[in-house]
Image 1: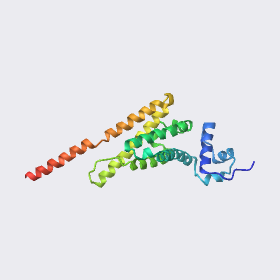
Image 2: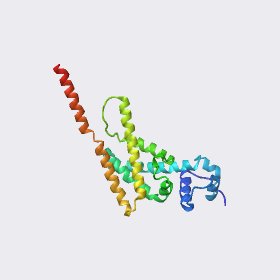
Image 3: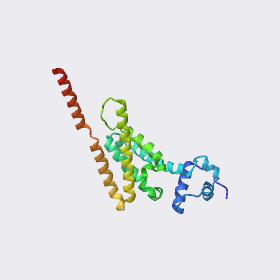
Image 4: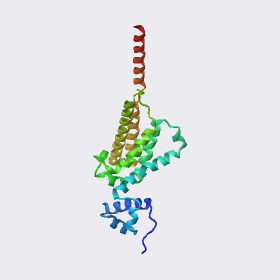
Length: 218
């Protein structure tokens, strides 16, 4: 049988996901993987350098597909940051669920240490950029270093929250993962309630007012 000549990124991703689920393990070599799917080994390297690169791309594709779906929604465009993030979560976990067998296989052995898992690095890059795009309000201290620190803390806390939700979803045995939906809603809403800086801003404004008044009275 003639070898397949036209091999795309998506072909390799699909072949790879099917292979690990059918064999319960990563291919032992690119040669074995290419032979199993009837294409030349060199074709693999035209798209990816390693199997880990394929795995990274899979998780990034799940993220990118989520954003593509969201941006097609006119309703999403007018949401505030809280509801945009909720929409992201629900859509992203629908995508994970559609590929649950692979995702659980890929993460199961590392589920208690997802934060340091290298195959999620591309997902993290996309997600932290997405968090920035939501323009979540932080304290306006007018100090560049402090602002960068706030943004960094926001990105990292949002990333940890996503990882915790992924672990919860992996362990969820409820019908249609209903418990995960509840977890998403409660955790995202709680995080925004914690980030509600309006009361703190009022305290700072009061402090500025009292300071000015005190200086004026001297």
